[in-house]
Image (spheres, rainbow, N blue to C red):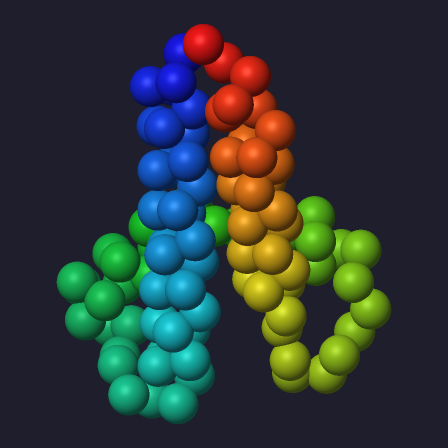
Length: 96
């Protein structure tokens, strides 16, 4: 059972990195540093969008409009960090 919890913690950590990569790529596209007409950039962008958007969309629908500022990835990262701490401090020690 601890192996399953370790895998869950690893997946949560990986998802945090995917959120960070998605945010950085969106900034690079917005400031025309990278071009989405490039097939590789478009594929990476589409992958990150499909992976992160299902969890970011509900957060965006609840949040008020902050203009051009999107803090939903930060909120999701904080939620994931909270889940990791709950798993490590409360669930992991109970499992034999």
